[in-house]
Length: 211
Image (tube, rainbow, N blue to C red; front, side):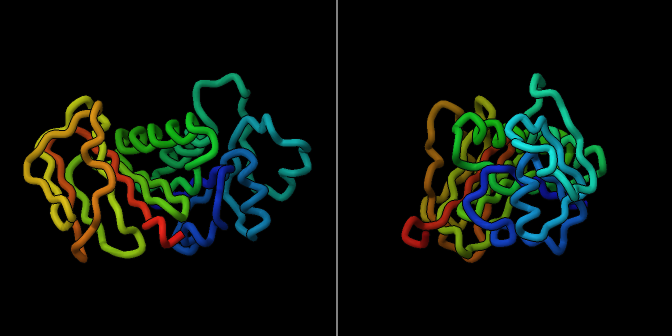
């Protein structure tokens, strides 16, 4: 089951970032509902503390609204992710959520790790990047994203192999205190990343000239 979580921080229209047609569950984090509504996208649920919502009528038309106190442990995005996981989602795409406040961006990256730890695959898409986590193996298809960066989310990630890149590697280790894997260029039609132990963060980015 595929779910998308639409966040309030978006630099591109939702439909330019993600395909809506093949999605089973659409959840909006807080006032992201207003953007979805403007684009004619009807979410199954809107979840958040709504601490920045100016008027209650802004939520008119929403199928389901779940309100939480602003004094809470979960971010609004995490609340949406938990909602999707509880409904059986095994693939969750977070739409937007990169940029703006750095702490919110980092929280969304940690949320990807939470998704992976709970048996699902999580991805962040913002129109300029693809961000995901890898515990074993991933194949990347060369396309609009020219660069891939690989970072250790655990203190040490072992037995990492990179094939199909400008800088290839065989059975190396990466640590979380040195960014050795930043900005590698995808050269093959299909590039591969594998890790024997630990969790990797993989970020795909467009060439700056293509923006």
